[in-house]
Amino acid sequence: MKNLIALFTFLLATVSVAQAQDNKAPASPKVTVESPDKNIKVVYGQPSKRGRVIFGADGSNSLEKYGKVWRTGANDATEVTFKSDVMFGGKMVKAGTYTLFTIPGEKEWSVILNGTLGQWGAYDYEKVKGTDVATVKVPVSMNKAPIEKLTITPANSSISIGWDNMTISVPVMKHG
Image 1 (cartoon, rainbow, N blue to C red):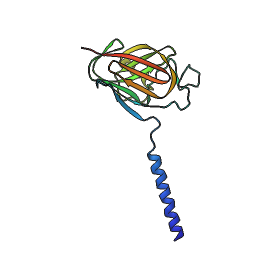
Image 2: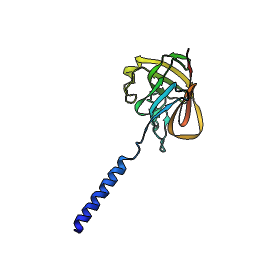
Image 3: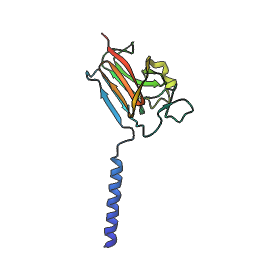
Image 4: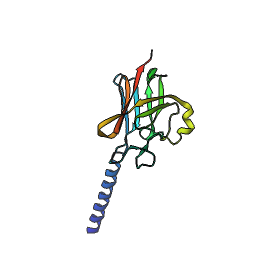
């Protein structure tokens, strides 16, 4: 009888631990955010800094390298939806959903909207760069304190991207 009780207790503990592990939040949860006027929606995987160096030169131990295409998030490539035509950093972009890539730099970033959806990361970017819809360069602002989680914030007139010690902002205006 003691063995049966011990076995039952062990099985119950094992199931509890397994359930607790299943309920843990993913390391980079999927986040959906919209601008206040609902014209811009962004869906992205939200990685955390967790003590890592995020941006740096090629050859450094940084997670993302200056001058290299980045999916601007984690897991699936980030997608941006515009419900109406917009001027994205001064470039005309039709209403629709686009993949967002960036090329981080120390002083400025290139921000790319690409027409090929359903991408994982930026691994195939070279194959799909012919479907780029707009590329704009924006200056970097250095943050006073590091931002722990990648944060993409669509406002009614911009999309801001902030992580670690850098933030960028792309002007976005409704067209027409």
